[in-house]
Amino acid sequence: MHNVPPLGRHMILEVWGKPGSIPYWNMDEAAAALVQSAKDAGATVLSERWHHFGAGYGYTGVVILSESHISVHTWPEKGYAAIDVFLCGTCDPEDTLGTILGFYGAEKHSMQVLQRGLKIIY
Amino acid sequence: MHNVPPLGRHMILEVWGKPGSIPYWNMDEAAAALVQSAKDAGATVLSERWHHFGAGYGYTGVVILSESHISVHTWPEKGYAAIDVFLCGTCDPEDTLGTILGFYGAEKHSMQVLQRGLKIIY
Image 1 (cartoon, rainbow over the protein chains, first blue to last red):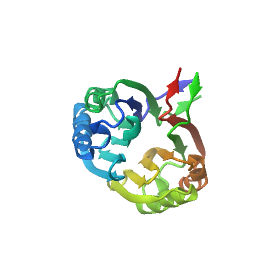
Image 2: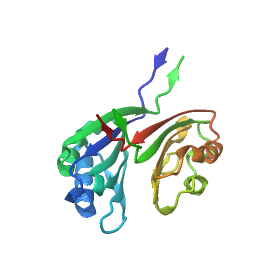
Image 3: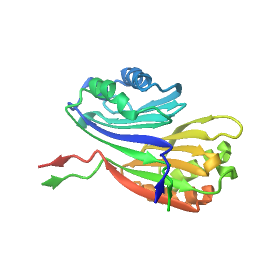
């Protein structure tokens, strides 16, 4: 069996903080934090798309990168954020972790990195 | 140990078709297909964001849903598409598979479904 490198690395991040706390409903601050996290990883931001579900609810955000994307969905009442950092090329998704976990005031988190576009040649 | 249900289900889909074939560079047709796949799963489209990397290159697309998002990144020269279908609530990501695999002319694919926002209470 011979492996070639993956085309991208995709970090699946589960973040749990304080229910009701600011970062889980303040979309503008989240946008700034996720853009900063992209820069931390050396990625280039092309555009963003955000949607807030209304007072008391969470938001969805996607930052489109030259190197793929970062997305977030929040549940403020649970203090939970589902974050994906998908980066191709030489950027390392784990370089976004410090800014993201700091912004969300993560008390617990879990993380896994998936290899995307990994063609296995037998 | 007591589990509560996950907040969302996230399908990670790896699609391999013919290198250079149309769906891997034709972004407009892809947008229509992914919107249709969202409808197949009973999801509600809020907005979309697309970026094409130029002639001969692939594209990135994100469809923002009331129920989270669908994203795609393509590598036409490899005939590869990295697709994510993240749906919260009662929508089932696997209901998008028929339209997506048909559109991309998938010759091989792999799929896994991650549970997101699964809080494990001990």
